[in-house]
Image 1 (cartoon, rainbow, N blue to C red):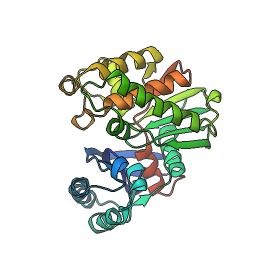
Image 2 (image 1 turned 135 degrees about the horizontal axis):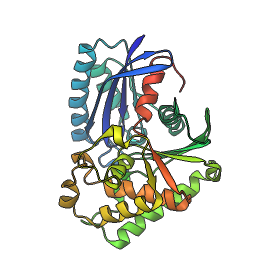
Image 3 (image 1 turned 90 degrees about the vertical axis):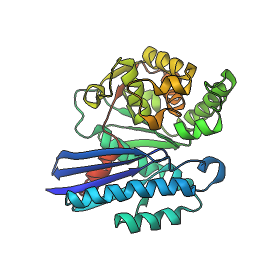
Length: 307
């Protein structure tokens, strides 16, 4: 058995998973998420903001204490879109090394895709392959096609934080702002389809907080329940209805939704919009929602598994 800590540092959130890995089984001991918005302004400035780095440092210090208390044996931290795009990422790397005692791996889009695919599909049974894993993050969205392994993947520079900062300035956003965001997503999808044969998809799997929040709303949950959301199925009509509702709401109305994490209030409309465009452009009848994602892939890899 190996007790591992997996840390996923995205554009919007910083997440920790501590798990015991025994060969082909994984027992989760602790999961935690903090919205640190590391990617604040990166699309505009090309740099990680000092206040975003400070928020991230505070969360990492807490995570390091948890890892010590749980006697973690191996740690892997992966940083994705915002850190890839930042000119001052060396400052971030040094901070992580000092606080967590390990270097963050600033992975490529292809590496991110492989980790997401492994986390979402390992142990998945009873569904048709090939899978199309759709990981909607803060700064990027990965499309990954495969069955037992990744066969094709591409990371698009469209995500809920990036699109919100670029286009969705009003509260609620105007039709023109929504159309501009949709144009960005559509261009990204067309670019991804140059290498990912999405028409071969038998099961589309949606990952990350935007997708799971849309699922929670479609299911009518009165509180966020990961066990109910995991492996639920979202119809195309449900995706369209929830997205339209979110984009018509004010920030105050979104914040009042019982399943809404405070750190997603201002970006959930853009995240849902990405999901809606994927459903419509790829002509998907439904999306299988997974709570297992890149964080689980990082945990498997920290114990010496694939990806």
